[in-house]
Length: 78
Image 1 (cartoon, rainbow, N blue to C red):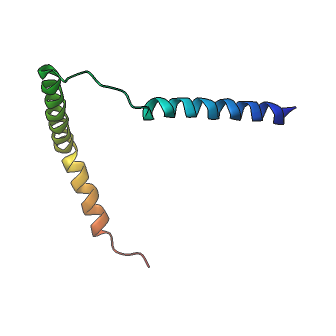
Image 2: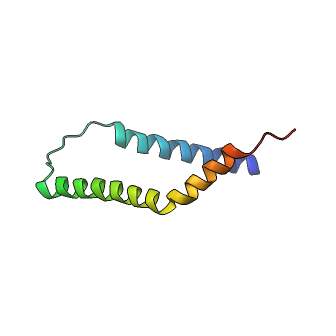
Image 3: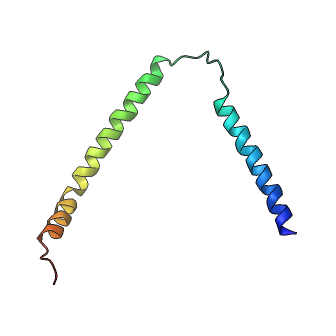
């Protein structure tokens, strides 16, 4: 009977989802701190991401410029 298996699967899925949601919602005490090296790491990740984005734009700038010019210079087709 396929319907019975589907109902059991759905009940198990709902129970698992409720359990996971309860773990995220349940208040807990955090006795932790962010050490200075973690802040430095986050800063390095942010600067690295920014520089990688700038490098990506520089590499593809000409291709992007040609693509934009082609799309604007095409006459409307009748």
